[in-house]
Length: 418
Image (cartoon, rainbow, N blue to C red; front, side, top):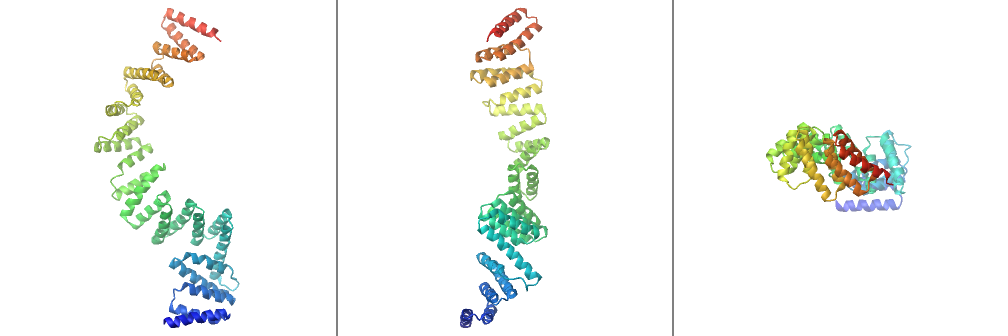
């Protein structure tokens, strides 16, 4: 058998050399009978038919060669065959053959544009082909390959995803899975990839993959600020048996401004993890958002006990104390903060605390005096004048005549200064 095959190959070669194309074709047919998967033989047979201007048979042979090369994973061979097909004449082809021919010819035009470095024109050409034939997946695949060659992974992924979604919508789950696998190799943690893989897992009823991909989608969606999608993914993963998404679920509810629900979730988590300071911090924030001031006071005091040196808690405590009617305690905190800020020469911070006190006690003489004194040292004339005017009003209303006279004199002197 091997000797017969060797003889057929030799005879075909001799016939090609002498231009006896139909005799060469007969030898090729014998070789195909021995090995129906011989893609290269179909390719040579196509060449022979083309030499005899039998373009219909040439097309059939080339298409079969393409099919076999594709099946065998020898994709580098296919481009060469497409170039040969594009040189055929469609005049005697039937409708189906002409469709194949035109499809390949148009693709070849796009490939030529790409080869010339005309990327935008090539992309536009492919997009026109896709618009005309949305279910001709070869256009999308070639466009995806072109994008990949130019390091445009996102655009390539979008084309393959479109193919996968068409297969998915029509129930061809295995084909959709094939394209999902290709996408996963390019962008394994991309949100589009995870959406597709999660949907496929759900359609197939694969609970292990449902858990895996929806849990990943939940985190990626949350990180991207897509909180509704994150919530949906968390619920799907939890239904599939994932027990570790409670913190993410609570944070997602918090991000969605569903404060009461988020608070309930954080409270449950705190019971399970009483040492977790971040949970107390989040509960404090939620209590403030929901105006649960008694709860907020409890949580801020809890944090103070846990972190006694955390100065950032003091202003927060003061605001909460005001809300629960403990004004004197709040005032004392603001005064202490202002003094501390001045010691550290943090003037703006000190003024902020002074203003917080004055918002509570607009007639606080000591604070007004302190502000005026600091403005004077800073050389801020107008601010000094404005503050002394406030003091003058306070002294006048309180009938503090001597103090009012002193302030009036100061204001007169300040007004005379240039």
